[in-house]
Length: 249
Length: 256
Ligand SMILES: Nc1ncnc2c1ncn2[C@@H]1O[C@H](COP(=O)(O)OP(=O)(O)OP(=O)(O)O)[C@@H](O)[C@H]1O
Ligand SMILES: [Mg+2]
Image (cartoon, rainbow over all chains, first blue to last red; front, side, top):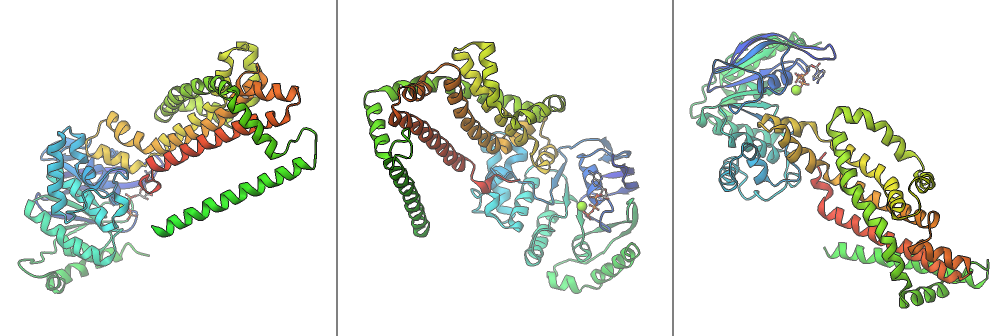
């Protein structure tokens, strides 16, 4: 997944991104982190092919793309679940759009509902679930289409702190085993340092790559609490803060 | 559960009590002979029963329901269809939104005599009267329902490789369904107004005929019974639609 010279100026004249060039390593979790309004969502949507860039190009496995594709799946900040559909249909929705026959796609959906820890909620509607559970539905939907690249826009921002920690750990488990390439937008320095293999720090608007940090947290068989006391983890948090501080005030 | 049933029972009690008070006042006013043309409640009820028994009410509603049903069916298909089209196409939106905004605000009843002037006094005119009153709200609600679709759901559908047709069929239409249905309910209420105006203004037929005839021969209890019956029927029909609407589209599953 490579970006070369990506720029985006909205029709309103706002220049959100300027000359973003970066290669995301395959099978790793990369985080986009930057000050508010610096164009993180814009960049992720360009990668997802949901909005066109005004300059530069996105390449996936060497091929230029300019629209959504089967190899990329999106997890939305506001969940974007169909309120009139059950959890089961929501998770199967990506497959439904691709024309996968009924029983087969429900089978797949059930499997992923189990994996994100929502077994038993297949027949519930989104409004009956908590924020954290809804986002698990969104995650299951993205996993169900079996894309290599998963794009997540602040998936935890509307989830309370305790649920968030649990969710982060589950996410790490789920994704590491599958060797997915994950691009993850977040506001939280700790979250970035905790989850990522690589952190892409963006400057204030117009956003551009300002620095790349590799936390090198040795996760091994450590417990989450041990990781949060890991020296590399704490160093990464420090480094990020050092860079971001410049864009404040 | 028991609690909500209890609350439901309370509501019915207050509803009945309020009706009983209104009817008692009506009865008293009638007995005091406020006006020669104002019959007591009991006389009106008796007249109603007489008309129900001799079949004149049934006959009247058989003919009143025709323009109402035909007109409403036309609005249901063409009106909803057009409203959806307006919501989906920028060009159609540009051309027609201003017109419908005006139509929806205008007292469309004033157009009914014009319709008679052009289409004569037959069924066509009466159907048109219903359409003219019911269509604006049906079209506008369908249009708004389509335009209000959550843009993030549309984006989600595109991200998962939905085609334009899939976006319309699987996201936009289901999302707009509740609002379209509400438009149909409001349209039906307008349709009742349209058909009564048509039957009073164009040629007296059906319930309009009953009202005009009995008032001309000074059978005031019969006239009041006819007026009361159409109010009752309209209220009951629209209430039933409202309940159906709440059943089909529970507020919490509508999303926004
Ligand atoms: N559709 C749009 N039209 C015009 N300007 C937009 C649009 N979307 C975003 N912008 C502007 O582009 C800039 C970047 O927006 P974006 O949402 O990508 O930032 P962000 O980094 O995701 O912000 P946040 O941290 O608040 O989520 C902002 O100044 C925003 O106002
Ligand atoms: Mg954002």
